[in-house]
Image 1 (cartoon, rainbow, N blue to C red):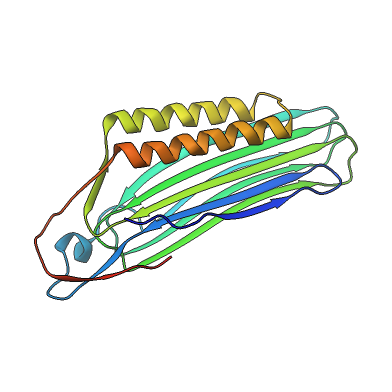
Image 2 (image 1 turned 90 degrees about the vertical axis):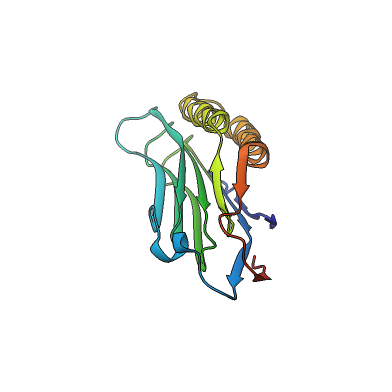
Length: 212
């Protein structure tokens, strides 16, 4: 299982809207010479996995609202699409909107096709002293073996999701929100490195191919 470099996009307009999109793709795709694993042929779990956190503020001035969370999903499908979206928009004076979305997808059984879409959008429209912060973090892990996350790992991810929700609603400055959310992303990486287990289902010959 190999780790590929993350893709980063950071925009800080004059309106202080901020957006950041992180997409991390861990992929080890195996092409089997002799026969396909039945788990891959049959498929189990979702083919399309989507998660989003959105906040849209209009109307009265000085509103503050945040939405944050974490989704963890497992699948054995041969084709997997993962969609993650964080969107925060403000159209009222003095308003603060914060959206933080974490998506973790574990794809076992050697999926032949993976599409990962990770989007963060922060927009201020016709307002003064307004702030929008959108942070999207996506982790997609693929392997020809069967993978599972330990109970301890699942508990850690649940706690990270709760922290992300509290952070989005905290009213902290955009810089503080970004710094803490980045730290939570590091915690997710640690969970995947320490608590994600793999084991072979079949002994077979294969050709190894890597794709980023």
